Amino acid sequence: MRRVLRAFEVLVLVAVPAVLILCAFLRVSQTAVLTLVVALVALVVFFASYEVGRPTLRQVMPTVVLGALAAAGRMLFAAVPNVKPVTAVCIVAGVVFGRRAGFMVGALAAFVSNFFFGQGPWTPWQMYAWGMAGYFAGVLAESGLFAYRPVVYGYGFLAAMLYGVLLNSWYIVGFVQPLTWQGALLAYGASLPFDAAHGVATVAFLLVIFAPWRKKLERIKKKYGPSEMWDFPTVTPTATRDHGSGPQ
Image (cartoon, rainbow, N blue to C red; front, side, top):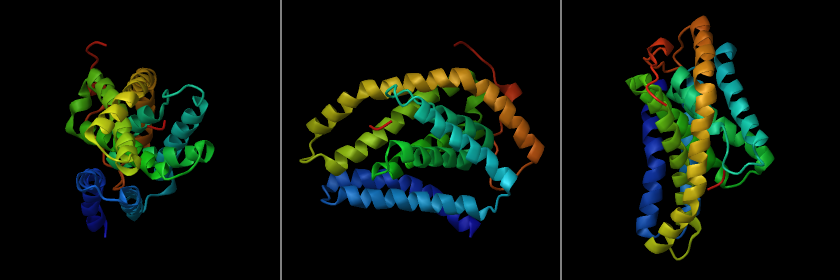
C-alpha cells in the first residue's frame, strides 16, 4: 500500500496543473468543479500516503507544530496584504523533514487558518499550492541545491510566485468567461505586484527564521531518529554556506 500511494503521489501532484491546462485548452464548461475535484483527490492521496507510514506522536508533532505556527503567522499578519510567513515555514519544514512533511505543513496551515479567513472552494487550492512550496523545498534540499543560502532565498521568492500563479490560474480558467489570452494576461498582470510582494515577504521571513529554525529542528530530528515517514535531505546545516546576500 505504501508503494502504491507513493507512486500515485507524484501522479496526482502533476495531474492538478495538467488538468487545469487541459480544461483551459478544451474550454470545458465545468472547469471550476472538475479542477476542484482533482485538487481534493491529490490532497486525499497525499494525506493517505503520510498516514500509511504510521508515524508515532512524537514524529507527527514537528509537522503539526510547524503547520500551527504557519497558520498563526498568517493570522497575525492578516492586516498586511500579501505579507505572510506560510511559504517560508513550509520551506523550512521541507528542508529539514523532507518533501512530504513540507507538503503537510503547507496544507495544514491553509486549512486551519481558513477557519479565520473563511473556508471555500479556494481552500483546497491554497492547501495544494502551499503544500507544493514545501514539497519542492524538500526535493531541492535532497538534491543538494540548498547548500548555498542564496539559493534558498531565490527559491523562496519563486515559490511565492508559483503560489500566486496556481491560485490565479484556477480563478482565470474556472471563473473568467469568456476565457481569452488577453483576459488571462490582464489578470496575471494585475496580480503580479501582489505576488511579487508575497515573494519579497517570503525572502524576508527566510532571512529571519531559516538558519535558527533549521538548527533547532535538526536537533529534534536527530534526537528522535530516522523514520520512513520523513524523507531526509542530504545537506546538513554545517554544509550551508552563505555567499552574499490570488488569495493570501
